[in-house]
Length: 191
Image (cartoon, rainbow, N blue to C red; front, side, top):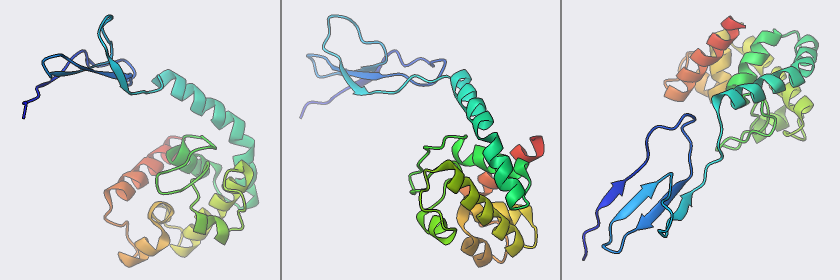
């Protein structure tokens, strides 16, 4: 069996940390990967990434924040919630992308799971108004459930209220949930 030597070429840091990756297999069996294929060689595209920049992402998020500001204010007023908290949750959950879908199956601005959506009468999780209304009601119920403890309510929003209760009404020891709580509370304090 021929031993293969893999060499990584031209993968210097890129300004936006994304680039298409190409693969070339040399006649001697060596394999090369690059983001800048050399002309005249038979490079094959193996990973395609859409170029994005921090500035463009920030512009998208800011534009959508403004686009959904009235909708969020309306839900906050309707359910007597702080709109700054809703903004913090939405920024952490979807970065104001109404089409966001998580690997776990959460959908929309407030990333509603199917069971949560059903519980709050959301028939179309992709509908921004329904999504924000359902997510706001869920967050309000979590605050009531945990005696206005914002940390536990936010942890419950991420991990589910059952997980918070399972760990004696404390933030579950899941790294994702702990990071999420810190992130949301930081966004909330900055707003």
